[in-house]
Length: 235
Image (cartoon, rainbow, N blue to C red; front, side, top):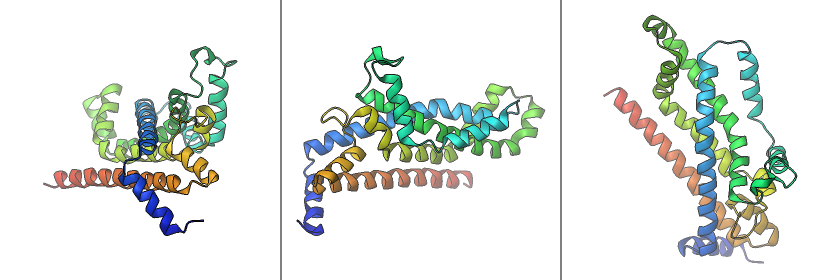
């Protein structure tokens, strides 16, 4: 068996050579993950803002529900999505099972509660500062939500980052609905698990290095944006 140095060297060679299989897997992973996060933000940001900014009957139950759904087990989400998309399920005629779209659906189900729950907390804290001003200016509900989301935009970048991290590291749900089919639904995380079990540690490690690099770059980008926002605020 090759030593760690040999395996790591071969993994770096695959990355630097832009191995075609490696690039295909990375590209699909990013497309699926970014699509799922974008959809989750479109759904989750308004829901979180509404729950955080307004009082209504059942608000506490909604808050508890959002927080509870943050801990959804991925395999359970995968099973639910599978039942919905299978031939006997309500969405079976669409033929989405074992496609990238199915993986987007599973990731969206997982990420949306995280985005909504974290947004609710950010908006609720901000709304306490602005509540009297909104009342004195008689700001309508829609304008209030838009104003809160805009003012909290840099904090919400962290929320989006949390959603991205949850989605890009997902294995259980997407392997159930995607099947990890070569050249069709092979993601970075599922390929790492499969190739490790097969003993192809070079490809698995190469994908692991890329996954870590993506996480570092996204974090660095968000930190840079927030730092520039702070500088602009005190300029």
